[in-house]
Amino acid sequence: MIEVRNLGFKYFNSRKILSNISFSINSGEFVLIIGPSASGKTTLAYCISGIIPHIIDGEIEGEVFFKGIKISELDFSEISRDIGVVLQNPEAQIFGMTVEEDIAFGLENLGFKEDIIERKIDYWLKMFDLVKYKNYNPRFLSGGQKQKLVIASVLAMEPNVLILDEPFINLDQRGKYTLLKIILDFKNKGKSIVLIDKKVTGIIKFVDKVIVLSNDGRLLSVLESEKFLSSRERFEKLGIFPPRNSLYKTIII
Ligand SMILES: Nc1ncnc2c1ncn2[C@@H]1O[C@H](COP(=O)(O)OP(=O)(O)O)[C@@H](O)[C@H]1O
Ligand SMILES: [Mg+2]
Image (cartoon, rainbow, N blue to C red; front, side, top):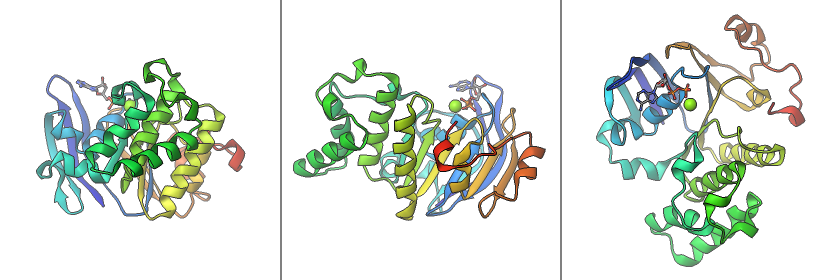
């Protein structure tokens, strides 16, 4: 689905952010990208979603391919049809004057019929406990509600690849469960997920591949594993300590 080959990146006014990164994301794969703050995770998310180079520019080395085509050569609107991105800061992604309008916005752009748009809005608002905020101005929602609204707006567009940049941070426990369930349903449909996080949590047991970035934006490791249950030592060698108790209930800590 997505192939990253010897990718390097530098914003025009920055140090080198990413160096020599290679990995692939297959259909139906759940990929976790972890690394400390400022290791370039968000920048990498921009690169695999086409935001770099289509919206944000810089000096790029190597290539990112989407379905075998260089992402730089595709139309951004075409990429966005397939790849849904939930950015780290939900505020940057809220455009509607009301919650309802915010979800409708992307759907209208995709040309969905009005009755289908309405049905989708109701479905996703219910999914995320936002029904009573339907006519609210999103500015007045809490951080967690904004996060849920952005995720709902992206999922309503039915992307084939979902990229989530630290999506759990603003969510309460209930929101975390909902999102986890949605991620797993999404994966069960054969779609690909890229989850970005600072560290490994209990969610690891659902993941197919872990990509570990060093603090200076190099690829420390790509761990492709059955379910990582036997690779605790490999993580610990990288200074990463997965939670010992991986019960479903303590998935996100
Ligand atoms: N638009 C930008 N221009 C210049 N430097 C940037 C820009 N965006 C991010 N950076 C720098 O790139 C580095 C990596 O940032 P980021 O990709 O956000 O890492 P992470 O998501 O892992 O915290 C940071 O040092 C950050 O300051
Ligand atoms: Mg980030």
